[in-house]
Image (cartoon, rainbow, N blue to C red; front, side, top):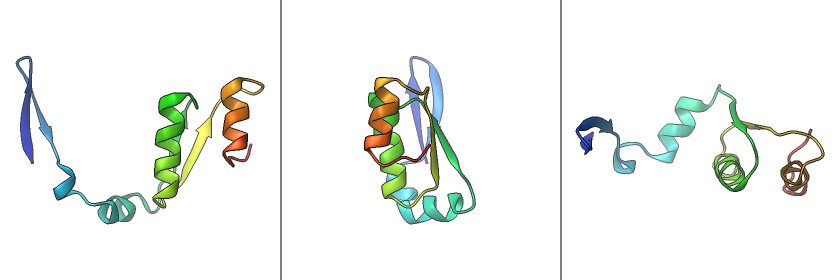
Length: 77
C-alpha cells in the first residue's frame, strides 16, 4: 500500500502490483457491478469490467444516444 498526499489529505492507495485482475475477479465473483450512465467514461468502464470477466449491468435512459450505443455494444435491456 502507498500513502499519497493530495493537497494535505493523505489517502491509502493500493497499487496494481498488489492487486491483480485475478484477485479482483475472485473478490467480485459473486457480485454484480452497476455502471450508471453509458457516456464516454461509463461505457469504457463497463466494457473493461465485462471483458475482464466481472458481472456488470448498465443503467441508462431509453431512447438516448448513449442507450442506443449500449445496445450496439451488446448490452441487453
